[in-house]
Image (cartoon, rainbow over all chains, first blue to last red):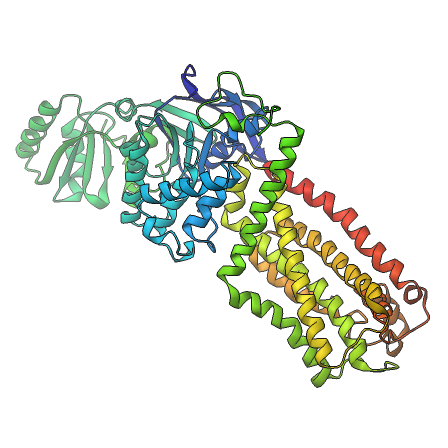
Amino acid sequence: MAGNVTDAIVLDGVHKRYGEKRALDGLDLTVGAGTVHAVLGPNGAGKTTAVRIMSTLLRPDAGRVTVAGLDVRERASDVRRRIGLLGQHAAVDEQLGGRQNLEMFGRLYHLGARRAGSRADELLERFGLADTGRKAVKQYSGGMRRRLDLAASLITEPDVLFLDEPTTGLDPRGRAEVWGAVRSLVGGGTTVLLTTQYLEEADQLADRISLIDDGRAAAEGTSDQLKALVGGDRIDVVLRDASRLAEAAALLGSPGSLLDPDRRLISAPAPDRMAALTGAVRALQEAGIEAEDIAVRRPTLDEVFLSLTGRPGGGEPVGEQAVRETKAAA
Amino acid sequence: MSATTTAIPGQGGPGQGALGREGGAARLTWALADSWTMTRRELAHWARQPVAVLVNLAFPVMLLLMFTYLVGGGRGVQGDPTEFLVPGMLALTMAFGLESTMLAVTQDLNKGVIDRFRSLPMVPGAVLVGRSAADMLQSTAALAVMAGVGYAVGWRWHNGAAAALGAVGLLLLLRFAMLWVGIQLAMVAGRPELVSAVQILVWPVGFLSNVFATPATMPGWLGAVVEWNPMSATATAVRELFGNPGGATGSWAAEHAQLLAVLWPVAIIAVFFPLTVRKFARLSR
């Protein structure tokens, strides 16, 4: 399918405004066929607007959007035959049973009554819902509902699958269920575009990640490439006594340190892992500053987000928001 | 599919050939098939919730019995008050159908299932056709139940089957007009709280009609307002066709009730049908 199309999704300078509010402000995005691409951004960054445009639910004001090689404005109904959409709200009929839902959507994909029925059974089996296919969806757990929603998005084995915040509002178990289901799709040739506020989710599932902010792409790359943008590894030192934070940060010596008094934490760039670790231990010992914990780690996507946008990414523990850049340390 | 089906060059993968661009005849076939699928969806809802269906049917029956035996509807009418009340209640039931349409559409819009439908390669109007088919079926059933109960409490029609069928036609025409008002309100308002507001507001509108009492007993200005209520036109016309007492007032609106019972709904449909179709197509703006 779509054999010679190497880019499954291309957005070129896409604008969309609602009244005065600019939801998308020149968004560019390219997603290679057969890859999993995460669009990561805080609430209101324009993620959902972008997905609704790509999946033909919304018209862009300006810019070009092609999905599976087809222009979404000119070929909307052809695009719809090649995509699956998992929206933010479970887009299934809660009053009907799981199987009734899938069969109905199959008919609406014009599979014909018999094929729609057999496809419904296949998908229920595949997503572990065969036993509960007759139950009304409103009796399903959040994770089951999401899996049914995902099954409904896969009725025609779409070339491109859109997942708009697929795990928002799910408990950890439901999240694991959905992640498992998404991973099982990869390798089947389906291109997956997922939006998320959860940095971990992007890290776990995606080949490439686009950070978007204020309706524009702020950065794009693999998880490692993005983390390298904030200067590679970091060393975290937790002190026993918060009042000596600034002193300790000066000893560690590198510019770009972050201080978090609440957690008594210094986080400094560590271009050379071993040198940073041994250097820090020695310097703190000589100055008589007691450390509770010292560790070298990869930067988090949240730090990438912070450094690119000046604001923390959404969906993470509040602690990160207390991290402040220090000028005194430099 | 037919010979008019054309594959899209380089895009038709396995299982997709049959889904290429259809010609006119094939499009019509799919439009009918999709509409049927959407109607089946509503029928399946009923099968899943028989109690809710029964409650919906019982509610107007309860109103009818209440106004017949408790409240004393049909006051000031020359003739049998029950014969006056039953056709009025039929018209009221049709007009109140507005609520159930609005509620169903609002629920769909808020659940995101409409987004799924819109992202499918189905004929978009099928969503609206399914809604109208189901609501019209439900209302026809409601009319049958109400007529049965009405018969039990002493209501009769006197002008033969043809006139009675004409009356049923006028009632369903009013319901069809309310259907489009209901869908439009749901798409404009779109929130469950506003459905409750409409569920309350239909009552004063319902009482500002000649359903329960003849305008002859009302102050002049109020009687005039009441007579020009579209529901009053249908109620009066249906009373005439059934041969039931109409509480004649001699006004122009009362004398031309059958004409108004056609014109009002047609005018409402002429306004709201295009608005609704346009609004539905513009969900993508």
